[in-house]
Length: 106
Image (cartoon, rainbow, N blue to C red; front, side):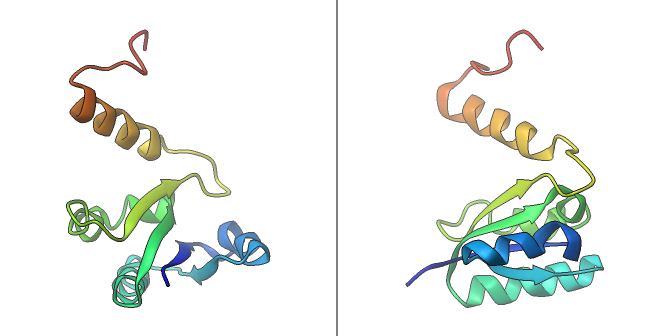
């Protein structure tokens, strides 16, 4: 059975434990990369990662971009959004549709 997990700073991710998501609090980019590798080996289908952590491990995340699993989804942390998640969504929609249908006015 596939699992769902989240990687990020402790304050941003602990609340997800209450809804049954596996929580991986990290403080350094190396810890985040190690958690990502561990989660991919343990058949996590969806891995949420806070944008503040994701920006520091983009090369590790990109290794999984063409794989079916895990789906790695950047989300805002408790410090707010860096726009990484939305830019990734825009890029994927443009690739799928061939045009920017979401953010034309921006």
